[in-house]
Image (tube, rainbow, N blue to C red):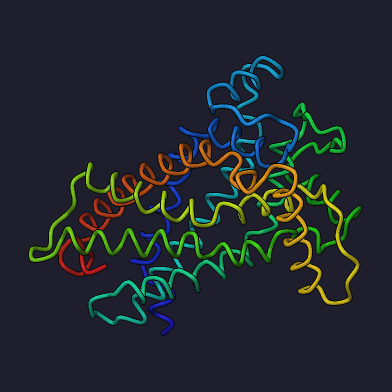
Length: 312
């Protein structure tokens, strides 16, 4: 079991996944900025993604779409390293050389997601706040913050709000482990279908397309919860006074969903979906493409480029 946990194969998958995701996010980062503004700032009108980015640049400067890039990239790198490592380690431990199935991919994806959420939520809370710091909001109720960097943000949040605030949004994040789990289930399933009959390395176009399809389905299915997750991480909301933290989390999520639906209708729960789909689908497609290429090249260099790698 110890050798399976600390295997070179899982490490290669983790490094390839982290490198692919960091590169892809950097390329499409402005699209994520537009999505986050629409989710958090209720008074900002839902326009097309280019129009939102044009407003941000006009009001806040040319580099505003890349505000908060460094903490986001740090969080993403750590998060994807943990997820890819856990996913491939647990999958290898379970299958022991057998063919995988969609249900196994889904279960392993959920388990890897839970570990990832519990370990990396503090990083995402900090990066959400740093990314929104200095933004010009339409909503006057949003309080300005003043963090000088990642460590200062951690220190201020702990001192002013308590250590627990670093795990704001953990409950919806745990529900949202379905997003990468669904994504990986569809992606791995489509890979198996394309390789059916003759094990082979997929073309760049095939990897890009199935990565995009998998992410589009997962994102659309879980988007309302992603909006609530962003609001909770930003920390500008009223928490119900309940003794039970679980009950308080459930009431907070329900309250935020109902309040948003009342103000903007059911479609208000999907505000920013266009920007999110544009960003997340392109990012995921490019990430999977880079991940597959990096992993494949590394395994070939290590002498593991045969069937052993292709079984996954």
